[in-house]
Length: 388
Image 1 (cartoon, rainbow, N blue to C red):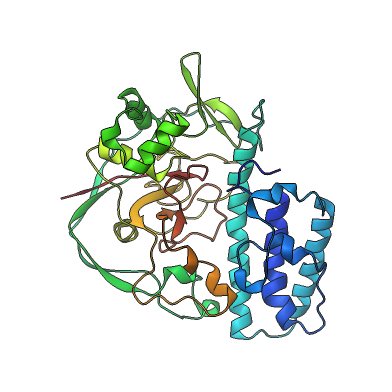
Image 2: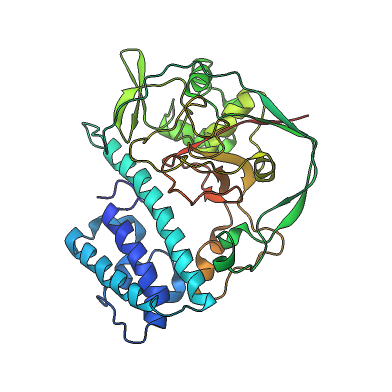
């Protein structure tokens, strides 16, 4: 099923990640490999113009054939061929492609959770994706503290063209490493909570045009939105729909599924702003163990219960003030792989960190996620910053 053009069916995610390995590793580099089905490249190519035409994105939900069983067989066919390919020593180029394919699949594992939540939210009974015990601890949100930074020259990003087989993996959009000048700033030591977002709602945050960018205000008027996506007011009490089903709003949890327009309006209401991505990267720590995808924890955790006490990683992606543009000196890789990130570097905003659905080992402080400023179906939240 496909609940909106930005979402993809679960079956399509699995077939597409399989197609990626088949197209970029097996077909050009395994001499005896034969395509599983010559029609699959058209069905499961996402946006790579250099490798041929593709089925329209908004009609992926109409792909009734192949069924899920055949997709599983397709995956087995490709896995077996990949096993044969890796029986001999791989060149650095192939090693890099294999690692890229793994991280590409991890991205889609997280997208699958986001898309499943949106799809289930459209069902009249709002069923759970996976039921688990609710965190009933009611620790008071600790006061927001401000981490102070003197600014000056800071180095961000990853070194350009370093072989991925010999260092921590990064996507090409995280390169090259470069210096930026920062004015002195403060950044919050935790994420914004549902309790704080309720104060924003109660103070007319969704009705005050002075808080909103013009495009965001126009979208708000059209949608008549008055709360974050998946919030629902029932008998004067707020509930929120998540992967574990509809539950009473947990005031201590980080707010999630808000757009950049919403996050920016909240920051303005708070007499603050969103951090730039350079400020975020300079202030963030490293991803702690146990912070990421766990099928027993399918919701963001409070600062008191998170494995990362300052919530840089493992709860929600965090909107930044920065537009998604190439770093100075950026060059996309040659060939079709160069379409992975480079051609999307406009009309998007950068998010940093990771979410509770990010696979373990996929997060790092240089990671540049990106979405359109109106998007709010992802696991996206915010922390605040302000000038000194």
